[in-house]
Length: 286
Length: 102
Image (tube, rainbow over all chains, first blue to last red; front, top):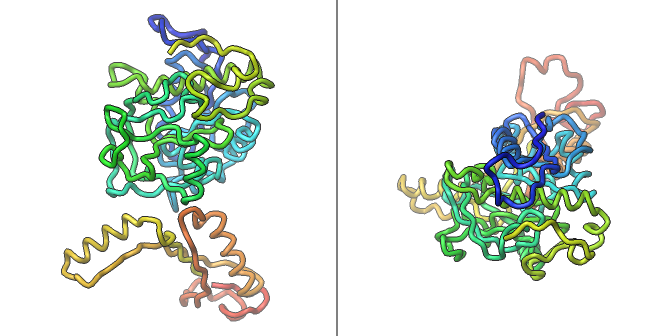
C-alpha cells in the first residue's frame, strides 16, 4: 500500500488536494477493474488499498469502491452471489453509518442485489455487450459524488456492459425522481436525454442512482477509465475527486454532515450539508 | 425440488423477444410471445415435503430470485433414478421424516 503525499507534480488546478482521503477497492473473485480503480485513485493522489472479499475491516476507510468485472462469474444474476460475501456485510454497516460507497458497473449490480440501492439490472435491450463512450448528464450536482460538477453538465465516460438496463417499479422510480436520487442520465453531446442516446434501454435513461442518504451511489459507466487525457477523457476525475473531497469533509466535521441531512437536486449547485451547518467546504472551484 | 424463476409480467424480456424473433424467422409465424425463465433443481434433506418446500421458497426469496424483477414457483418432483441413491433410506418422495425430498 503506497501512501501519496498530495497530488503528483503537474496536477495544478485539479482542485483541493485531498491526499488524506482513504479509499478501499473491493476485490471479489472475478472482479477485473480493481487494478484500474486502484491506479486511478492513486494517480489522483489519494490513499488506496485493496479489500479482499473475505475481509470485513473497513475501519480505516473513508470510501469503499466496488469495481467492475464479473464477481463470482455473474452466476445466477450479476452480483447475486457477491452480495453475500463477508465484505458486503461490512459494507452494509459502513453505509448505514454514513460511509461513502461507490459501485461501478458490476459494483453497482452488487449494490442493487444487496439492497443498498433501489432497483435492479436487466440485460441490455439490444442484447449486446456495449463497450464505448457515452455522454452523461449530471442530474444532481449536490451529491458527494458529483459536487465538483455543475447541474446539467455533460460528462464523457466509457461504458462496458451487457447488463446495464436499469429497472425499478413505477412507485420506486417516481420516488427516485422526486427525491433527486437519479444522479446521472444517458444523453447526447448537447445534454439532451433521448431514446437514441440511451445505450441499453434503462428506464428514464438512468445511468447512476443514489440511496436516500446519498452516501451510496452506483453507476454503470467507468469513471476510473476517464482519468487520463491520453486515454480519451478526464471527466471521470470529477466523480472520484468529489468523493475524495466529501470524504475528507465528513471526517473533519462528521456532526455537521450528519445533522444537515442528505442533499437534493433542488438545493442547487454548491449547496450541501456543510453549508447548512455553517462550515464551508474546501474551495474547489468549478 | 424445482424452483422456476420468471421475469415478472410487465418487465421487458429482451431474451424472450430475441427468441421470439428467431422462431418467427424459422417460419413459426404463430408464435406470439416468448419468455425465458430459469429452472433450479435442488436435492435436499428435510423433515418432509412441506419443510423442503418452505426452505426452497426461502432460498428463492433470498437468492435464487430477485424480487424486484422476478417471480418464482416451487414444486416437488420425483428424483431421477440414480445409482448413487442406492444407500438412501426410506422412500424418495412423500412426507416421511428424515427422508430425502427431491
